[in-house]
Length: 275
Length: 273
Image (cartoon, rainbow over all chains, first blue to last red; front, side, top):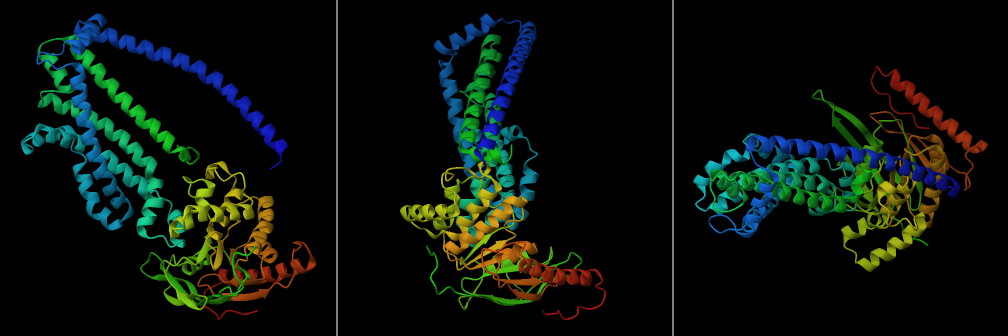
């Protein structure tokens, strides 16, 4: 590798980068503008049909944050409740789905037994489990955790299975030539190689779990963002409904953004391998 | 600097037979009684047409596959699945993409449970030998194909294997890189005192590198010819002597190819040269 060739390649690279940078930043401004206009239009439509104004939404947000609802819970109490339960349910889902996903992906016997079970259960929407879970579990907490588990479990499981199945056979062979045991092959080859898919599954799983929780809270709960939205609708306070919706959306966005950041940081190696 | 002592074990492959299901309920015999030995410190080239079962044979030697019949012994002791006495350079790129160059090289030591300081000392040494200094912290997607091959050599050699198996190790490289790395491969295996079994389908490469060359037939494959390449090193690819070896081997392969094309009757016993 000659240094002259290297330098000219590098400067080419730099020029290209600069060129594409200005191009991207221009089109970015246009895209943001368009997105902004669409959002404003959407708001105008929503405001027209719900007969509310931005002021009303902001006012509801401030009052919910400072005075709270009729039972005295502040907005932050509802947020804490929902985030706490979704975290619990999500952790249970990850702890159960990842090992089972690895087993299905790696061992054909497990795949042939559990694969059909998974395919049979998966088409049932998680929200359809809400009534049954309320019947099964005496405690509201358990039934909500169960609903989140149902929602988050399958995306994590399916992605883990796919990731494990995609492990390059040659990498496993490399480990074997060094005399690696099955547990070392799992730890040093299969899991690192499947990690990108597992992380993506966790991100998707969290999103679905969050949706399921809001739905579950609407049906049987006395606290949480889903409950708040539901009761505000019952009392006909549109501004409060909309501001709670925005808070739910914002939390979902922030969490999945952070998961994506962690994913990118941990999986730097993947960038050169595939998208 | 010698990694391996002077009492290197010999690899002996005895009467290996392997058949695969052919999809029609029957079995296709791939390896039909392969026997040979590799002497201590020897560089043995194994040539054969594509699809003659070279990779299968190497995987059996490495303990990644079990033969239907026959036995592999290292240093006179039979070895089976799960042994870790060989280094293996695979045909396709096999570095772990999530590990840096150094972490890849140290992988075998991690598996055997060496402590960190010993790992670093050994990897520093082998990184110097293969010429990967300054690239230790790069990820595999940041290095070139030739550098990846050097890293794979280092990863295989760091555990001081009894024999290094290379499966078409330089096939996927462009011609210049390939020719350069042939020389580097020889230098590295010499410096580490390694015994090598080098599988190739490239006659030029085998003549340039090997002390001895075995030629395999089409499936069901057997060893059909053996040449001791008695040329001084460093060798000249285009010297009359090298070309003479090439011509003889190419002729054997041509005859073998014709036989394969017109194979309608039963197998004739292989012709030994």
